[in-house]
Length: 241
Length: 105
Image 1 (cartoon, rainbow over the protein chains, first blue to last red):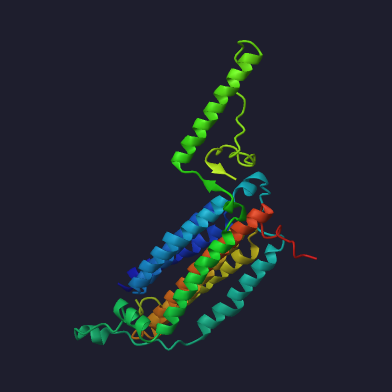
Image 2 (cartoon, chains in turn blue, green):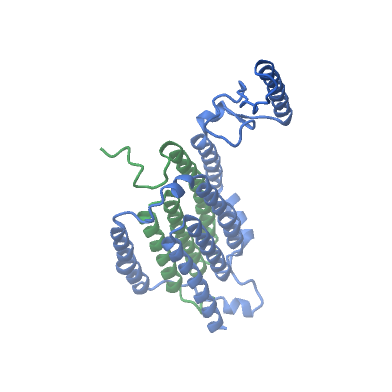
């Protein structure tokens, strides 16, 4: 049983660290985000191995479900310049300094501390489990009780923080020009189309009257509503600045 | 679990994950890549908390409580950070960290 758990731990560790390394090394940002999702999944599996089931579910819901999608959306919204001026470098000029900092932190500080320290590990619950009692590991019930009794104030503060962050994100990402841009309803769009067609017919009649019977190509309709819309061709009629 | 895998293995794993995230946050040019590195570092911190809870104090839930607090803060941080990246992209037409340099003298 021991060796099985060790093998599972080794596989999970390889998944986490391998995906994290691929996330750093990947040239394409989208690939980077996908490797990050794989790493999040590995961390969730590690929580399951550490018998923190509720936290594993939260990890999958919040990290894999929400934050990854947020990151993917941000990449897609900021991708045009990346594609246009592809320089090919994904690291900055002093990346070796960053590598030295991270490597020194790991090699000189974390590993000696982790190995040199004698941790005061609690005794295993073999005796309690053998006697048919509870295993003594706190579960989701204790977690909820902790939120409503011991950490009630912190819980409220986190709620306020989430609200403030939500409002802040909207305020920061809010497009000032969006105030003047309005997405038309279907009725308004039909009305616009009807008006355009009427104008086209009138102009065609006028041109036929002026220059004989030769049918001219329909002139580009310059509606007052679609004025100032040169910036985004392709969705004229839908988006009005 | 606790007698099969020693605590130092889990701590080493989280330390390695933290250092990979630190390197990503410091070295990546893409701002979204920097945020992804920060997320990795936060994940390493949560792994540490869960490991200490499981190995040292399995009867008290405090470690998991604070892990969930960190997850909530990380979600808020990701939302605000990505909103800032989108705002920066709108003004500079770039998301490269070394090209957004209007504060450079």
